[in-house]
Length: 215
Length: 111
Image 1 (cartoon, rainbow over the protein chains, first blue to last red):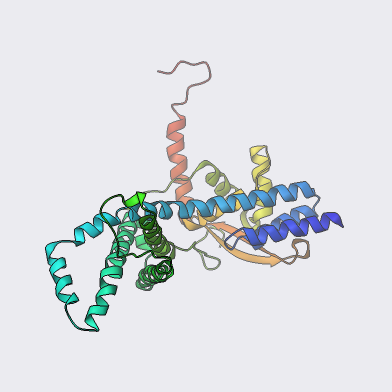
Image 2 (cartoon, helix red, strand yellow; image 1 turned 180 degrees about the horizontal axis):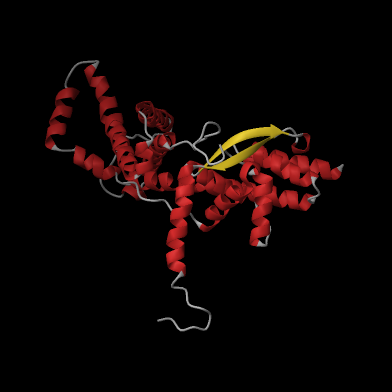
């Protein structure tokens, strides 16, 4: 009885802690082997090993996007500096002098637009550097990724706004020595990471009608 | 022209085992056969990870089969090698065969 309970726990862990569609066939295979005389210890070893392999595979998938998003977010002060050319400054000043609602919309333009364009640029650079991602990209998925990036940016802007973090405030000096700006880089990195994860190609499943030797 | 895609050692073993097993290539016999051929136990999770990579590359295709009571009602997932997978196996073998030719015998001095 104890052994059956132990196997049930291992099977539950296997089916809930491994990601993807393999877990049903995998746990079925392990149960079949167990029924044919494998030990409980063998079953646990296989289940834990499968969970470990699954986690490693997933972390490998997300490691590069996370690294890129983190690195890209550090370039934000440079992006803001580029945006502070005389032309944009004069447009900004002219717009600020207009009556409501134009003056109010300036807050959004000045805060969100530079951040969103920075994230989208980063997203397109990542996409271009990963051929397999660019090839599998559909218009709908592209739109979804850009939209996710913008939504994460807006939500985090609102959430961080309560704690006094403002994406519009980007001083030129001591960028990473300032907790305020570290919070902004996390916000930007999260937004870009979400967009890339949304664009990651799904594993292909060819269950029927495939070009095969046997069939 | 598309560049040929080569297979890693374990992926190649899995692919050849699928061909060897034919219609009966699902997780249990695959793992057993691999364990016999390699002379040590294999992790079924690693076999599935390799199968997933091969499927993502288009070298194998899978389909769900029957479920049995001894599997707790869970379906078997059968695998078949695609023509692309077969071409890749041949390409890998050709490259390895050329490389093996320059392998000196133990004790023999390299030129």
